[in-house]
Image 1 (tube, rainbow, N blue to C red):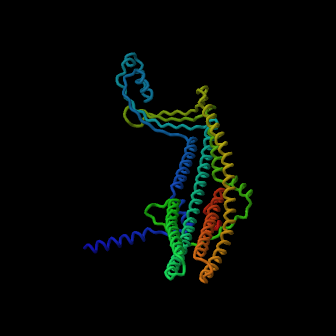
Image 2 (image 1 turned 90 degrees about the horizontal axis):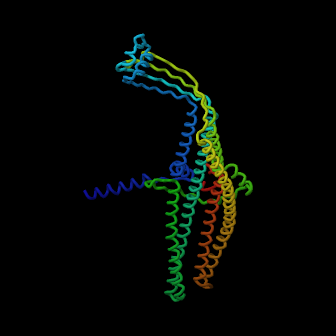
Image 3 (image 1 turned 180 degrees about the horizontal axis):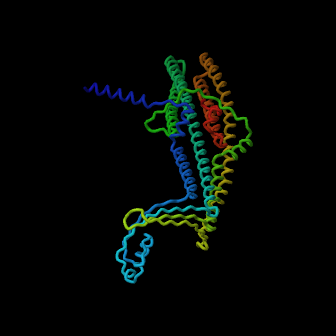
Length: 452
């Protein structure tokens, strides 16, 4: 029984670990993040709220209808006479002093159907509609900007996984070479062909490379965790990344000035802030318009009877024209507050334009620097390989010491790491440049040349 329990437990763990593991390409990781990332859900909720506010503004111009029913008991003479009139049952006997002074208990049921329709509000409803549309546009722009930020983060995290895995390969090769040298050094030392310091240097080199390997393994785990966080993956989902060769992301063909123009015209957060400013101005105008003339159509139908039913009907139709003469300057002050908020957003817009120029410049320059570093590192890798090959030959011939060979191989490892760092910088800054320009979208993902 115990063996069966253990076997079932192992099988359950095996099935669970394989059932929840899921590979993601870059495009799939982006699609997953745009659905599951908490910021994406927040953007969706804000968009729904803005749409609801627009519907509320549209509802302000619609007619209102209500129905009610009331029943009263009263010995008030006026209520008694009014009830007789409303039931259309007035007789001469109702106007005798005795009946007027002592009407007894009056019972009256009243059913009312009312209709009210604002025909003219001085433009307040129209401006509220404009504000609602601008608010929806602002929410859409903010949501699009959030999606671009999520995409850039996923791209950078995904590229980080690929680079970390390649760095792990470099570290494993370095450890393998260091172990060979350590074995060779101990053999040569045992036979008296090298001094003890060379053997110790080989051991130190092996330890250093093993430490680098441990760090590389940790970096892979960190990169996978960063990707899972960017994607908004739940704790129970094991993410795997298919083996994809690293690509050299090319420099874009546009000039820096062209990127400036693209960013200032296409950035969703700029469009969102402009729409928010327009919405505040429309709300300010609506507040001012509430003090102008208001025209409202009203209609009402009532049914009166002593018992609860619909017997005697009376209806009223009319129009009400109103004008606020004094409201403590509340509408004027509310409009002033909204105008000042719009002015505040104007200042924020100017600051945003300056920050965008900085983002574009930094991403463009960083990418150009990364391309230069990649070219240098690639050339250094070739030179370092040649240096290792020459030093190995010289060491085999006894024309150089082991330390020279270890230094040559350490230079090769450094050159490979520098090339990986430049490859990551190219991809990360390409994504940052597209996000800074506001051109990063699901449709343009493949054109970036990153992990595709």
